[in-house]
Image (cartoon, rainbow, N blue to C red; front, side):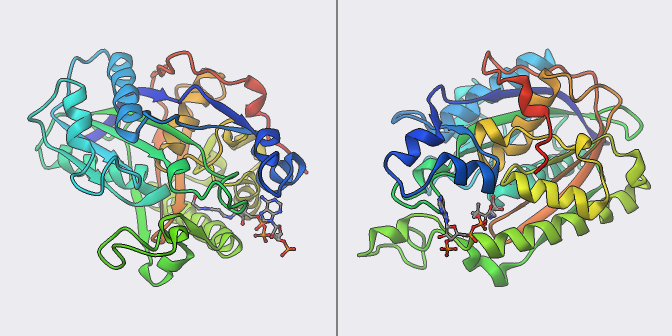
Length: 344
Ligand code: UT7
């Protein structure tokens, strides 16, 4: 059995925070943020809006897009769960009226959605389930120090979900192969030092926020995603010239442009929506897919490569042929100009 993508849904919190608003309280500027990241604005969850809430809403939208009433299992990719314990996936299942199905969190940071897709694919292959919801949801604004100009402008909040069903490898929407990796020797490059078992409490409140060595992460992201895309294409026997759309984790527009250049891929094949949503971590890939479908930039029959890189470090890629799935964005549409590659 192979996992086949059968529905797509998203949820973005309504509050839009633009670069100018941020630069009123941080030592930064609209020009710096746009030039160095490609981000114009991001969505920020208000108090009361949580990862579970956004994940449930995106999953509900994906279910209605798929035409299915329910699923047999749920996998939630997140590194910002509502609580450290328990995992958030059971609460999402409960919110959907699906208490009782197996539901688990996968924490692979910005690569989480790809790891969750692979996990769900394994459940389908092992015949543990016939339909699985896979959700990527993160509320990184809660982990960013609002006074830290090196992280606060980068991250945004949101959720995206897909419904996978058991099918065959020859069908449009069939997922795989996958190429997944991790390197814990570089965990310190992107880390929240306190709050876990290593450093439960800290006198320094900054330890509870995300610390990122941006330049190093940037370097590894470009190198590892390029390697991974080439590896997955080799296994899939898909030549680079056959790739219609590259849907990369939206961490920085310059990373995506560097990746395209390294691969020798024309930028017109890049899917980018970072300008309007920022880095939404595990939600990044499904949000980018939904925006691209909605804008007509991703169409049935397109050969799509998914690739991501994040804390851990973790990275990976997968491929699929886009199926006739329209996506349900619940009215959170963004301007179509975000599909135009920015060339500097
Ligand atoms: O999603 C998980 C994976 N995450 C990523 O992939 C993020 C990867 N990293 C990045 O996207 C980039 O490294 C950043 C956007 C985070 C930073 O951009 P950069 O071009 O690498 O900047 P930098 O860290 O090398 O800093 C250049 C300068 C520094 O000043 P000096 O030392 O040259 O005087 C920074 O202090 O820019 C300064 N700077 C800022 N200036 C204005 C850093 N952040 C800001 C800011 N506004 N927000």
